[in-house]
Amino acid sequence: MSALEAATLPMMLTELRLPTIKRLWPALAEQSNREGWPAERFLAALCEHEMNERERRRIDRHRAESALPPDKRLSAFDFAAVPTVSKAHVTALAEGDSWLEQGANILLFGPPGVGKTHLIAGLGHALVERGYRVLFTRTSDLVQRLQAARRDLRLPAELARLDRFDLLICDDFSYVRRDQGETSVLFELIAERYERKSLAITANQPFSGWDHVFAEPAMTLAAVDRLVHHATIFEMNVESFRRRVAQKGLAPSEQRKPTTSKPKG
Image 1: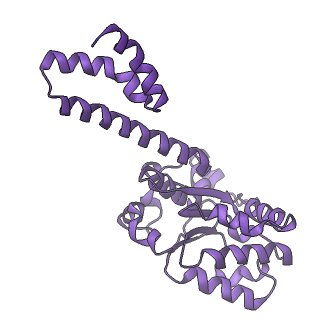
Image 2 (image 1 turned 180 degrees about the vertical axis):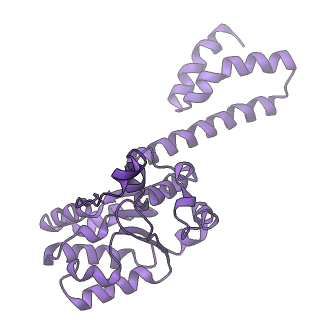
Image 3 (image 1 turned 30 degrees about the vertical axis):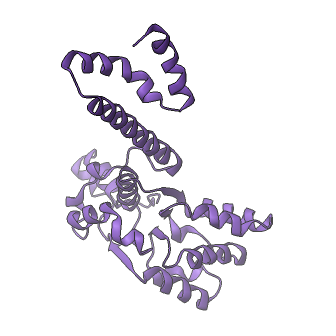
């Protein structure tokens, strides 16, 4: 390669938006010349590095936009502490393919502190690694976002933006309180994604306690019907993980003392 070609090649690679090839080609070219690679092998090696780096950057972008708690991964989830949750089942869900294509849902029920958020966030991280787009949000924050969109006459556009995500995780669903403006936008979201895009919901209360979420019994029934159709449901009715951890740091006599404080969800 002439000096002119060596000088202009980086500029061409910049113009073509091939930053990885621009960074790696000198070392690979030297190795190719030294080992006598065919041109096809040299070109394939450059393209492979470029594609792998693009995939890594894409996953990094999707993880950043997901708003998933960074420290809540499946590798750190204590499956032994929640015997009602099958690790094999969760691992299968982490593959993502079939249930996300069907727009199926995941519903997690249990008292505060049992690991609902950790489990679903860990599943979200696994799906991002596989190339899916995930968004994690507190349900109350999502409701405010949808209410603002309705007020500005852009609710259809906001629902369309949420449609970009293969999985929308609504944490602390049962903390939303009955209000006609809130429940109507939440119901519209559920109806819009029904059998098309997946929802994952964590809730401290079972369906029977959702009368405070939706303003009308008919709306509650319609929302539950759409959520449970094609759904995987995890019942996580075990002792609070946060309480267990706290008690480990107490003396036996202190552990037996009753407490009147309620753990946060």
